[in-house]
Amino acid sequence: MNDIMLFGEGWGGEVRKIEPHLWQFNFIPTPAAPHLREVMFTVLEYVSDDGDIYKVGYTGKEPFAEDIREAIFRYRPNPV
Image (cartoon, rainbow, N blue to C red; front, side, top):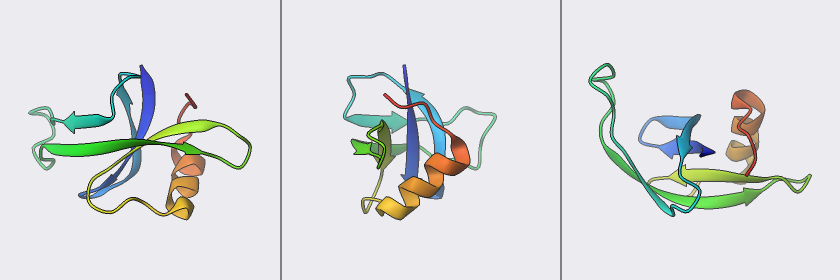
């Protein structure tokens, strides 16, 4: 499993787990999180300035590189 940072539909880079081979990710919330809804994310790989590769999932517009860098700093996902 890889860490993935999610963006769009209220997500701001929070980290979840994803199978390594997926390029689309359907997030289905648990009943314990009724404020969330089902969302389909497109998955891409972001290469940081130091060469680490991170999985990024987004819905709608692709996130800006600055937003991804801030999420890496804030949430500390594991690189691929």
